[in-house]
Length: 619
Image (cartoon, rainbow, N blue to C red):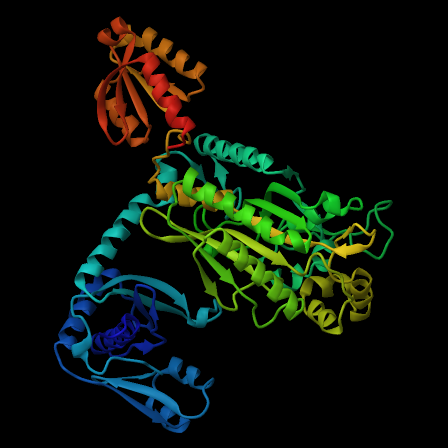
């Protein structure tokens, strides 16, 4: 059996051949295999639409009935230029190639390609693929280049796998948090507010408040000290931490302004910007006064809002935004305390994922030292070994993500699978060798800053910039006083569990399909009087439930009971309580439970006990 990636790659060539036969003047970009299928970027002489996809797919199936081979041939650059003389995009690709050029020919279609491919079309499942959609794609991902038409396709080893994937896609569309956010009145965005900035409506704000309060209580129980830090920060901070050099493309522009009389007379900048992360300010709180070893470990937590400039094209509902609130915490400890601290973070992470939110399928990934890194190799080995040891002691199954650590330290990434089996990254545990240390500014760093327009505009000359950077230095120099009265460098661990409130709730809405469990539901109970003469009792029921802390609405509009029930089901309210003559007589309610329908009449007191137990257990 051929590897599915090879089949997908081969199918992209078959699609290109089909397109060539149907649209002879087409120009070809690239056509790689991707997760779940493949795509090809194409320039048509006349635009095509999604209505043309069945025609292309039909032609592909006709081609696959022929038995022909995929033939590899290596040619010189000169030969390749002749072969692709009418294909401008292929000629551009040739400019970056050296030595012999690899090509594949399949049924009359020739492509620049290293392979691999199947030997023959006989090895391609004829019912395992489907052309999915069209999209626009700039050539080589550069918006200055020509916009091409990208045809996406799905491809699997069997029709059964394809059908199951399509079924899950339909279900994913039904659960799309953007769609449900509108239908359930949960959140919105508005161009007047700004792209990628979320407006939390009352219903989702209730859910967020519950989660945030629970998060705070659980962290306080575990010895975390909660703090607040500003939404903006001075430019100097991110110069010292070197976030500018690594993350300049994701930071909002600096608010450059002139020195204000009486505010600053030093050579330091007083320009500010929206902060992209919370950690430097947590360091400033730690450094406010000398810290003794007796105070360590010091665990600091914040639900801190940060801002990162994501391109408009990648913004996506709640899951890709420009302003978001991280459940951000930092642990300052000694090297001897590291393993125990990481173990405690792992325990808390699993508690949140598995016991509270029901994400039973949790996978950890250990991201190790990348090619370019800060600190010594021995520091990295110590950190990586500590993370491994902590996971082993907590019996966490983990995979190695070789070379994918961040430049300042290794990390554990926590990924969960939702109810559709999709994997999402949430939390992370990261060592940091950058922020807590201090070093002199290098000539290379001066050059890197000088290449940034913000700093050229501000300092005008490289000499002035160099003086500023050398005065600033690199890192925040975080130390503690050991038992012998000597200063020692602190170990700093970054960690999140939920990641960000925005992204987490986007995932949660889709995981539950908008049907939040009772403890989280914005409206937990809807009371529905059968007629106008039952409204008084309905209000009394509502008062009793509110006294017990339940979130209740009374549906006393002049509409039919069936319509009110239907509306409650559409809004995914966990319990609908219908009250009429019989319920008044027995001081009871007729209970309709979400997903189960009518479960009968219960005494009001017994229903309250049932609901309270469900909330307490966070089912």
